[in-house]
Length: 236
Image: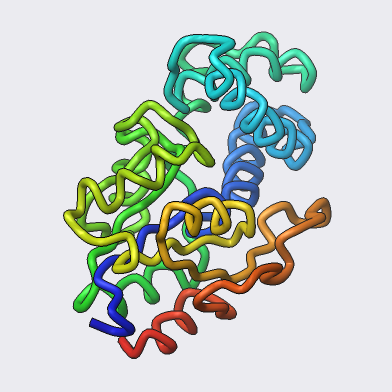
C-alpha cells in the first residue's frame, strides 16, 4: 500500500461537500417557487454556526446524546423566526432538515475518491449520523466502503473515541489510516490518536472564512485538493 496507508478516513462537512453553497442553492430554488425573499447565505451561515455549540452541549454532558439530525432540527426550529420562516409547515421542516443529506460534493471529491478506491479503504470520519452520511454518499456518488460516524461511538469530534473507532472497526493499526480534512484542528486531534494526517484547503465559509486557509502544523501530507492527494499517494 502507498506509504503504508491502507485506509483513508475523511472529514465530510466542508472537506468533501460544499454545505454552504448547497444550502444557498436549494434555498434560492425553494424560495422562488414560493415567492419568498430570504437571505439564504445568512441562513446557511447561521444554521452552521449552531453546529459546534449544539455538539459541545452533548460533549460536556449538558444534555443526553442526540445525533446530528436531531441537533440540526432543534437549531432549525430556533432559526426560522429570525429569517421570516416561522410559518413553515412540519413537512417543509422535515424536508429542510434533510438538506444535510443532499449536500453537493466539491468538483474534485468523487474523481479523487475513485482514484483512491482501488488501493485504499475509504470511509467518512464524521460527526454526521449514519443515515445522513449514507444518503449523502449515495446521492453524490461518493464511493465509501463503509460508514464511520460519531453516532456509532456516541462521541463527537474532537473526542478521542471518535478517532479511535477507525482502527477498531477497520482492524488496522492507527499508522495505517490517513485522516483527511480541510480543518487543522480535526487533524491535530486525529494525530493524537496515532492516525496519519492529510490536509488540503477548502473555502467552505465563503467570504466569512477566517481560518484553515493553509496547513498550520506538520501533517504527513499537504495537498491542493483530493486529486492532488491521490497523486501524492501514487494512485494516479
